[in-house]
Amino acid sequence: MSGIADPVASTRSIHHPAPRLRSEAKRSRIIETAMQQFAEHGYQAARVGDMAASLGIAKGSIFQHFGSKDGLFFEAYKRAVCSFPKYLDVPADVRAAGFFEVLNYWLVRTENMLREDWIPYRISLLGNYSTDLVLRREINRFLATEDPYGTVAFVRFGIERGELRKDMDVEMIVSILDWTIERFQDALLTAELDPGLFRRQGEMPEKKEARIRQFLALLQRAVGYAPATQVRSRPVPRKIAGVDLAAEPRTL
Image 1 (cartoon, rainbow, N blue to C red):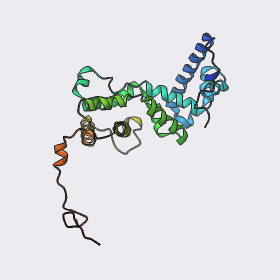
Image 2: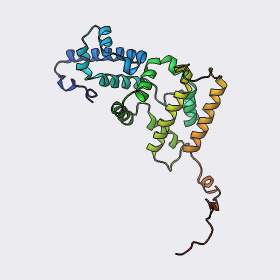
Image 3: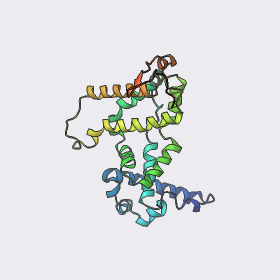
Image 4: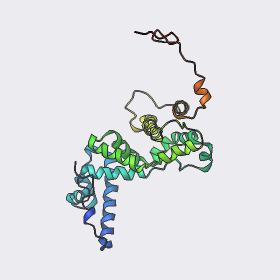
């Protein structure tokens, strides 16, 4: 797929700052318009021609800057996710309360984040669920290399506080958070994003709070620190699938 890389980046000259600044400003306006169009219409239905018309520029000008529709969406996605706060961008008292309190802080504010940042959140959903494998690969690479949510620093914060397991690779814990937190937040927002998707009425706040507590309890059991004595104290089964583990091994 062409268009992910910036096709005009290599032609910009450091000796002409004014044209470069105008070009960057134009790119920024195109991205803002694209975010609005993608958020309102979805990736497939959004039309580059409509974006160009609303900006009063030629359609070819957009392709000159971004190469393709995929390239344009990729830039919109990067701007969207980079606009979200990082995990540790919380009040001091929440941070002092620890790793799982920080997670709770963000989870209970999921719906507020959607209302306040509807366009970026919609773009992030489209990037995660409505793009082809080639574009999704670029998105995954960006998330892994740029870490826009500050997940690595957040995990190290939890390890340094003694709240997370030290016998697990940091990247494994980061991956578990990436896989689970995002999906759980999307589940919390299902009714908000598409009330007709499931045959149920809006849930009571108490039920959502209970689900958040249950989710955090499960996550804590998976990656939370457990003293070695607790691990060793678990009973060892005498039999697995009818085989006596304590029996003398047979020689053949």
